[in-house]
Amino acid sequence: MRSKFLVITGLLAFITFASVDTLNQSARAATPVQIIPTNLEIGNGLKQALEIATGKSSDQLSAVNGFFGNAAVKILFPPEAQKAEKTLRSLGMGKLCDNVILSLNRAAEDAAKQAKPIFVDALKQMTLQDVSNILLGKQDAATQYFKRTTTAQLTAKFKPVIQSSLGKANATKYYTDAALTYNKVPFVKKLNPDISDYATQKAIDGLFIEIAKEELNIRSNLSARSTPLLQKVFAFADKKKS
Figure 1: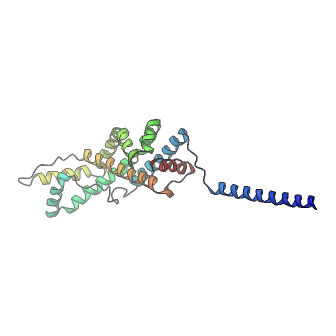
Figure 2 (figure 1 turned 90 degrees about the horizontal axis):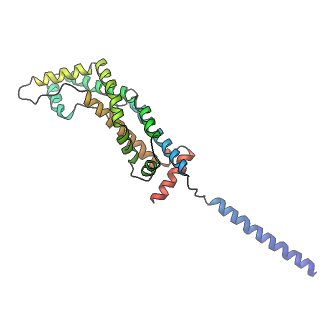
Figure 3 (figure 1 turned 90 degrees about the vertical axis):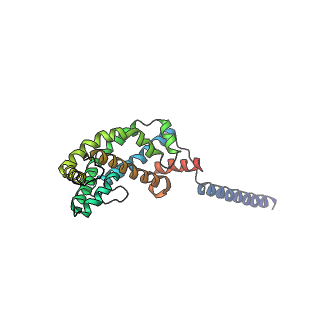
């Protein structure tokens, strides 16, 4: 009888221990393990995110109506020429003004195709310090990095494309005609008939506006972190900043 009691007691103890162990294992499984990414993973994850952001921005803006159909980046007459535009429209030259605006935006769309390889080169040059500053920095830290490192190259690449595109679309002629026509109006401040520098700068500004939008999306929208590496790296960044 005593031996039977000991057996039953042992079985109960084993069952209790096994149940507790099973519960502990379930609890451990239900609790996500926070794995800190390595420096290599952080660098690769950030570069992956920025390649996605810059590629998407370049593709969107280089499409037909990428600039012209986007109110945030659409290129209008230069501020100093907007009074001239108003005057010309009042003189029945609205079509000429519309042609100038359309041609400026078409030129910017042509130029945006040149942006991708420039951003890829900038990503290759990124140091570990750059990566850390961007990942844990402000919401537009990556955009500011690209402004510092690519603006000169973008200007050099964009300007000849824009000049060529403006020429093909007769934008140079349209704007020159508009400027020269306005310059004939008595007592007005004369306009510079060369529009290519302005169009180049506005095309680059528009590109950075779109990159900033994509950067913010990846930082704040969990669904935009489309790969396991992005999820791991930006979850780490979120935790570090909280």
